Image 1 (spheres, rainbow, N blue to C red):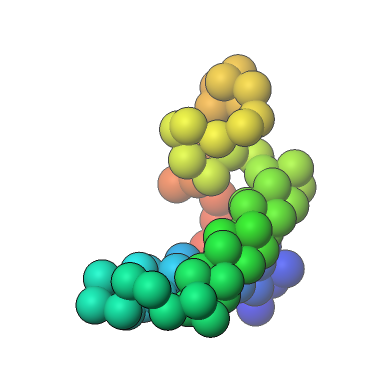
Image 2: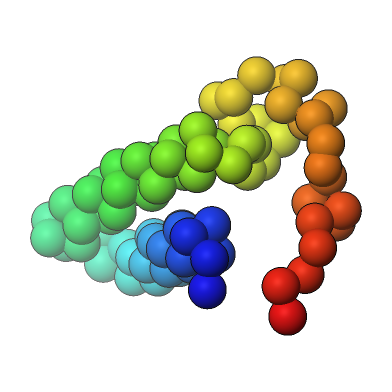
Length: 83
């Protein structure tokens, strides 16, 4: 697994945790520990996404990177598969 793939997995895991906490908070609105954990996960996700974008370019169309980064080659589908 490349460093890029490892970072993407960390981002996906953090997004999953945030989603699960979101669902939990739908039914446990005043659970202070869950609210605290959700905020912490969101902060950690922001750090991971920023790290990814600084190293590999934009992750989403509304990322913090400059919009010209989408015009650089190679496009994601142009990358050779390591498999």
